[in-house]
Image (cartoon, rainbow, N blue to C red; front, side, top):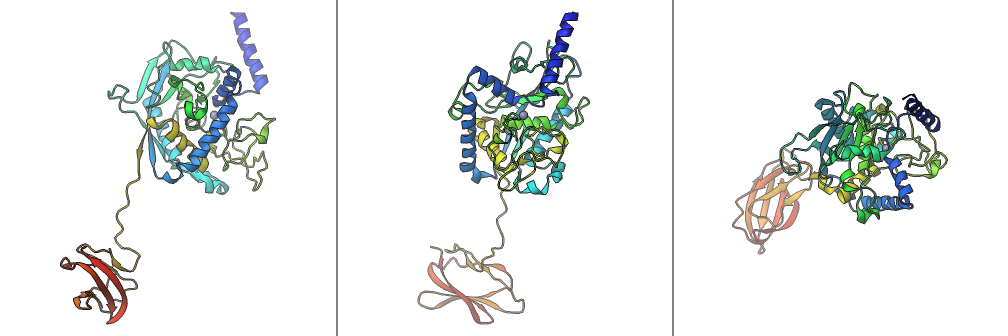
Length: 435
Ligand SMILES: [Zn+2]
C-alpha cells in the first residue's frame, strides 16, 4: 500500500513538474493528439476538413442567418456518491447558461471590449431538454445512474478510460447521437484532484472529415466534471459553468482560439477563424492587456472574451461571427438530426408603404392610394379615365397618407388614373383593373 501511494504521488509530482500543472480545463485536443499516434496523418485530414467546413460555412449558409436551431439535449448523471448526483436545478441552470451564451443574451456581454464588438455574434442556437426518449416515451431529459466507479478521472488524462462513462457497465450508453446532444456529468477528478473539467469530440462524418475513424458514433457528445455544471453549484470552481459552453463549441466543430499549437509553434498555428486574433497559447485568468502575437494588418489584443479560450469563465462572453458560421454549418452538415429549426416570427404586413402612388397594379377590387406630405387643408381627388378618355370615376379622397377606394369591380382592363390636389394634377398612372 505504501508503495502504491508513493507511485501515485510520484505520478502526481512528475505530472506537475512536466505540465507545470494545473487542472486541465479541456482535453478535446488531447484526443486528436492521441489519434495521431494511432493513425499518423489524421491531424492534417482534420485540418483539411476544418478548412472545408469553414468554406461551406461561408458559402452555403451565410444567407440563412435568421434560422434558429433548437438542439435537444439528454444529460446522463453518473454518480457513486450523493455529492456527484447533482440536483436538477444545476442542470436547468446549465441549460440557461448555454442558451444565454449561444444567443448572446447573457448579462456579461456588456464586458466585451469595444474592439471586438463588431465580430461578437449571436449563434442562433438554443438548447432544450429532450421530451421524448429514442422509443418515443416521455422523458425529463435527465438520466441518473449509480456507478461502481468512484471517479472517471485519471492522471495523466486517459480519454479511453474516461469514455467508460458512455458504456456499460460503469457508464450510461448514449441516446442516438444523431438525434440528441448527449452530455455526461460525472466525477473527472483523480485522487481528489480536479484533473479535468471536460472534453468533447468534434463532428465526425466520413464524407466531410476525410476519415471515418475520428470517433465512433456512440461516443459523440460532451463530458463534464460534476463540479462545473450550472451556476452556483455548491462544489463549483469559479464561474465554471462556461466550461460546458466551451465543450459544446468543440462539439459543433470549433477549435481553441489559439489554434492548439504548442508554445514553440506559437503564433504560426491558427484556429482557422479570421476574426479571432492570433494568440500564442491558452490564456488563463483575465489579463486584458495580454497580446501574445502581432496581427498583421491591424494588431489586436488576445481575445480573452472568447468561450474557446482557457481564460476565466467570468472573462468569457462571446463567440465571433466566423465561429458562429462554422458552428451553424457543422450543425447543418454533420449534426442536423439533433436540432429542430424555427424561423423568427414573421413580421406583420406593413400597413403603410413608403411608396407614393396607387397600388397594387393590377387592381383586384380595391385600390390603395398612398399620399406623401399630406396637407390637411387641401382637397384630394382621384379621377379614373377609360381608354376613350371618358371619366368613369371621380372620387373625393381623405387628406391622409393611406386610404382604399372600393366599388371598382365593374372596371375591367386598362385605365388612366389622375391624382389631384386642389384640382392640380399630382400624378397620372396607368392601372389595370380586375383583369
Ligand atoms: Zn477545449
